[in-house]
Length: 533
Image (tube, rainbow, N blue to C red):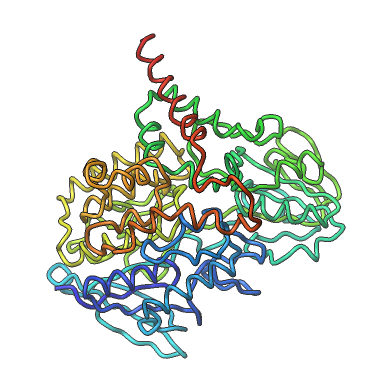
């Protein structure tokens, strides 16, 4: 019988795990090596070892209605896309509201977790921790790893010959804390991800010139989508997910490229991905195209090599007089506290976890990895549902298939991931499909047909509207009585912070013409496909 659960990390995943354990009557103990909660979103002036570190100007890429814990909406006066300090404030509010802080041991490092000798029978773990120089060992019935996948900064030195000869300075984006010291300098940012683009745009206000180098390009999306609504409130819907997966590949790919190019033609800005149909995670930046067209940011191909003062690019062009190089080249993830690293196999960025959570070959399913997944959806609701699924597995209330069936499922999904996302992003997944899969296992997936029969207004919101986290608290374990009302009022909260000047003839939800445009075009394409094939 699982009762005592060790939780490693008190970020958004760790807090969700504490709460899920309490909902299932388990006894959580969370170990956090820093002195506060928040994880990635806790800003510090100095980077901490083993943790990503954000810069002061970071904002969320998911809006508040899509980002929240599913039974704890953001205050209605919070902006749709939040500064990191605002999100951290919300995280603190969540922890205090559900009284989670008393289950956390701060300034406590987990140095090792290992199976006990009788693990095949008990499924128990020895968890060795260190605090104030003292080591302690405790026995736990289950472990939830919530330390995230932004762990060790990745600077691929071997991929850039001559870097050791460069006379200027180079840093990882983890060490970037503001633009001041780059004033009047020539800066090369390597990496076209969210961090790289944010930093390049910010530096373009103060640096002499900013260059951004990309090996494979990327789609750039804006937070402000059609008619001025948040992008994820319009894109992440059950109906759009159904169309994307139901349409023939050729049409689906054409629609995807068309959608990604609707803001501006990426090829005209040197940004278009090498494989434009892969659903790799796009970059969210509202300002990059304007900085490129104004010349303050220049897009360059991959660096071939460095000299003492310059970068030579793959196309043969040379940029002289560089002062700084900033590597926005991401992070590698690892679990140094694991006694047996083969439990969580990771090679070529491939992780062998059932449902992206559970090591399938364990004799007892008492280890869960929370948050080791990426999608267009927000981390908080994903981690919340992963934690709920895991605690149900720990209690034996969510039955697992055989090891061979779990491995077959992992291999099948890996093939789909490689097709949709490419070799380098195999922890990516389709947000709504993944969430529905977990929710279905624990009885929390909305029954759309039943909703249309019993609550048609709610059904329309659930199926055609944004797939907000509240949908996964409508029923099942952890059901929240406020979920229905939260869904029906989600657009009211979205518009409240932007409609700060009263005007006449206002609308409370996305206009009908937008919905018709979104629905009719794909349906016409289906008709034409059927007729001509």
